[in-house]
Image 1 (cartoon, rainbow, N blue to C red):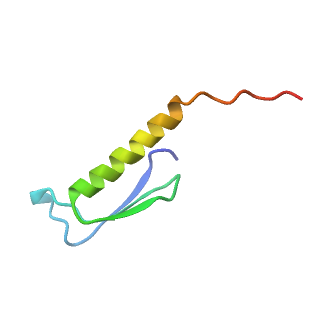
Image 2: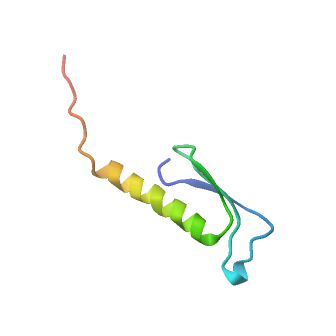
Image 3: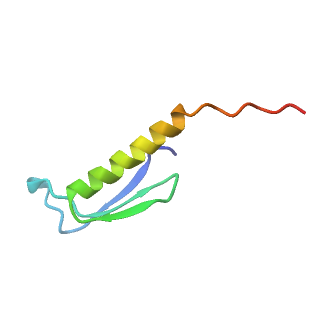
Length: 66
């Protein structure tokens, strides 16, 4: 499940001020972050997306025939 996330928002979240507080987990890797502000959340998502993009651009390993 590439680029799938579980996002949990806490009561301190204030969408009117665009401030989100909670935790996020990347489903396929299990990597988690507890974020206290929207910038931390966006940085995490950007890093995950960048890593996923790099992995897709790496050449496939050739199959070995026996």
